Length: 192
Image (cartoon, rainbow, N blue to C red; front, side):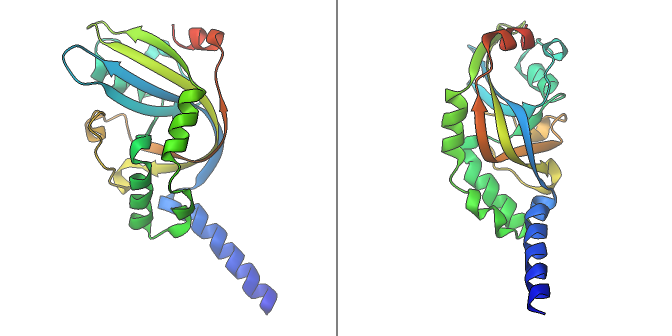
């Protein structure tokens, strides 16, 4: 009887962790992009995303909003790491899931390691805006969420995600174990 109870508790614990936000934690290697769009007429826009593959030829280079929309056609949105704890706390609240508590406080660490291990390049859009793109290959666990299931806090230096129809789902880095700086050759081939 004691063994059955222990087994039931273990299965329940694993099930709760896999249920987080109605989605599962996924271990994977992905490219993390930080997009920093600058223009002379507005404040900087900084947004993040992850993808397995990236094709620069599919980007719309007309202006910042068109660029962002075309980027999220091939990448998942990542909420700003500045509000990392707020996003996790909302996820915990919405789903009554305390298994994510152990990941609180990691946003600044992720920001520093991604910045320190990223390779940056620059694009100039047709309207004259500059896009600084930092790419870092990251490996670890990600929490996959649907945009409609969770209310994300607004960030003043992002385009409102509700106005970007290409953002349907988003990923939250949870437990990143490796940060790899892509080679210059890789970045030149990826972003032409």
